[in-house]
Figure: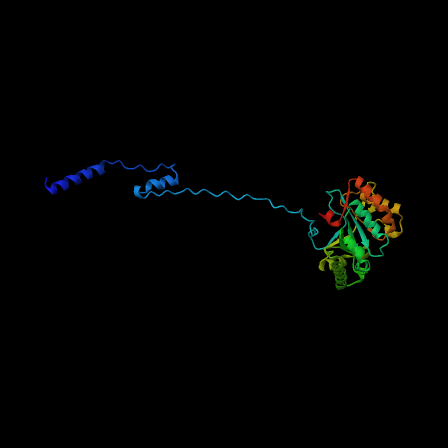
Length: 290
């Protein structure tokens, strides 16, 4: 056969063969990404893609942390000037406070009674007292809450606003230097003597909470006070009875006694026992304000 006719015959056969080959189906929609990529490639260069397997999320190991310390800041109600006579009424707690400004007779014994009872309270200290009894004051501050009762116990009503601020600051400077703590924002005016101007001056100086003591009426309508009267020369029985009367008001009561009172020293074990039996927790001012 002539060469030209042979070439024409072979070309015709190739055209017929290509026309009769069935088309390759498209990959089904459910096919994996890897399979679809393989089908689309030419047979001579098949590309096999390894599916990406998400890495497992790293295991989260809970951090072991210590129990949170009590809040460093005392809750301060809204408003400009605050005098507190009573704390939270929703919890069975009372604040037992001691003013320290005279001598220290019996103070170590009071501290021991509180330690043995596992009770932490608030001590309103005077700068002069801390400077006179630094070791005892440090022992108190190591466990209890410290508040400001002035530097030299003047009548703040006789001082100017600047003098009031200076006296509070001088006391707090002593507390920081000797005890390593600040008393802000808790304070109590010497002898409880204050007026609106005194309160405003202290607030302006950064002393936001003046802590007085509770006044109220018992079930018979009689007026009762958180002042134990231990500074009046009352004996231990009378002081204990005064505490009983006011704590009958229960939740949130704030009492005041003195750290150099023999009557308070003698009555304190019985008072703490009775309050515990009554279901009242004796604690600090900061606690009853929460």
